[in-house]
Length: 286
Image (cartoon, rainbow, N blue to C red):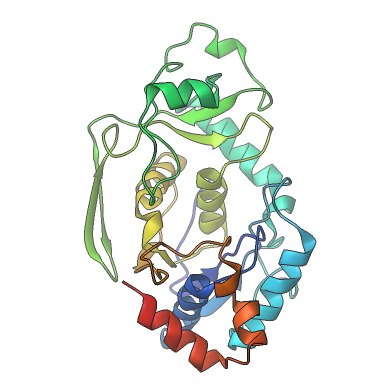
């Protein structure tokens, strides 16, 4: 897998249809659209509908409605096509399988049979900015690894280079540095239910869609470090990154899709205009 830079700014908004978009999404997606405009670039809409248990058609519909109501316009996406179609992740499985094979053949991933209970007992609970606990390496050197050749029934983990610093200059938050094996451990790239994991799918898609800058929330800084490792071993150029500060509610809790009262749909039904909603989001940002 390789990527050549075209010299054109290519940004993206990449919602996951697992719930209603909220104030934090509005602010981040608006920023992504603005940066594409400022750079005379192209904005892509990617529907990250990988999880068959949580993604629902009505949330896909609400994504389109909310983004259009905010005034966000894209030139490539599931609804309008483009040179890198399809733009829904549920339709892009062959691309992820190719990357999985590449990683497996090169020895970068290994099968893991640890249960959630095993992991809970072996590692501390993750903090609010990282939903994957530090993996203790239980299955790293399992003797039967070479005989397992299926994506089904086991989690496939990326073997991080312990002690290696992953550094990048964020275009909003400045220099960032994480140490593999300390700040994050071997992470899942393919789930036991035969679904590609977020880290792999996003990396593959950003590479193949020739994204030049990723705009997203600061809660994904550690994911960026993981994805930079994937870009490196897959032979891809990494995009630049712009991480937005987080929007929090009045109690200081990070916005989540369970906060229906802060959803874009709820607030626009109350009569807020796009400018009012974005102003409210900015006031609640860190």
